[in-house]
Length: 456
Image (tube, rainbow, N blue to C red; front, top):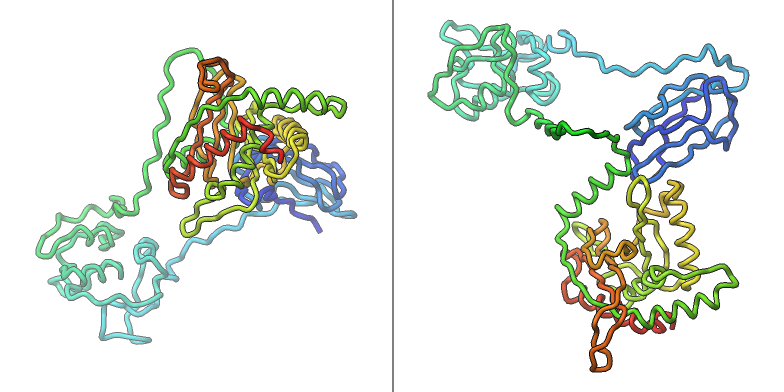
C-alpha cells in the first residue's frame, strides 16, 4: 500500500514552508534516514529525512513552491512489491454544494399555525442558509407581525431577516428584497427603519447586496515601482518573518531606551591576556563574547529584567539564555547562547563561532534560535556609535552595542583619553520599569569596566 509523504512541522510554530529543493526524483529508492528534500522555514533551511522505505512514485509539490501547509501531501511512496507506476495521486476532498432538497420539507417558521407534518414546506436557498448563520433546519425564527403582503401572499424572507424585522418592528411587506426572486435577506432589514418605505426591489437578475459588516477588507495596493532600472527579489520566508515580527514589536511593545557610556580599557587588557593563554587551545575571545557574558551575569543580578510579558502573567527566568544577533545573506537571525551567566568565556566563544557559522549556512535547528531570555546586537564593527534596537518578542529587552572609540574621558578626576563605547538597552515597558532597566545598565557598565567581576 502506498504511503503519503506529508509536509513536516520542523518547528513548534511552523504552519507552512517552502519546499526549497528535492534531493530525490520519481523512481528513486529511499530508506529510513535518507535526505529527501530541503525545506525552508521562517528562519532556516532544514533537511527532511525519509521515515519509511520504498520507491518515490509521485512528487506532488514542485521544488520552489511557497506556502506549503504543514500536513499537505507532497509525495507518494510505493512500498516494496508495489508497482510505483500504478500509484495515483490522492484526490482532494470536495465539500458538496447544498442541494435544493436540503432546504425543503421543514416547517415554515413564519407560520405559527402549522407545525410538524402539517406545516407547509418552505423552499430555502443557499443564500438564505448562509444569511441565517446556521443550517436552515437548525431552528425556527421568531415570527414577524408583517409577514404577509396586502394580497394575502406570504412575504418571501429569510428566517434571520424575519427575526431582525420583528425585533425592529418592521413591516416586511414594505421592504424590497434583494435576494433571489425578491427574497428579503439580512442586508435589506438591517438598514431599514420603522415606518420608512424602501425603494423598489432590484430586478431578479441583479446580484444580492452583501452585508456591509461581512464584506472582506480590501487588499492593500502594491507599491508603485518607479520607472527606474531595477531588479526585483522575491521575499524569502525569513525576510517575511523579520518584517512581520519587527512590525508587531514596534506596534505592540512600548519601548523605553536607556543609554550608558562604558570605558573599555580594562576589558581590552584582560581580553589580550586571556587570548595569550588560550592560544594553545585554538580559542580567541572577541569583545562580543565578553559582552555576552557580562549581559548574562547582569540579568541574574537584576532578575526583574530577565522576564517575558504575557497577557496575564509576568514570567521571570532563572537563567540567562542570550540571543545574539547574527547577520546572514538571507537576513538577521539570533542563535542562542544558553546559560550565558554560568558558561566560561572560552565556552561562549566556541559556541558562538559554531552557531554563527551554521546560521550563515541556514543549518541551525529550531531550538538553537527559538527562545532566549534577552538579546544582544553589536554593530560596533561597522563603526556605528550608538543605536536603539527593536525588542525581539516575547523577550523583555535587547542590548545594542556601539563601536569602541577613543574619547575624552574623566580618569581619576582628570581629563584624559579612554576607549569608550555606548550601550543602549531597549526595554518592554509593560514588563520592566525604567528604574529596573536603569539598574541593569548600571550593573552591566560596572562589569565591563571591571571585568574580573564577571569571572568570579
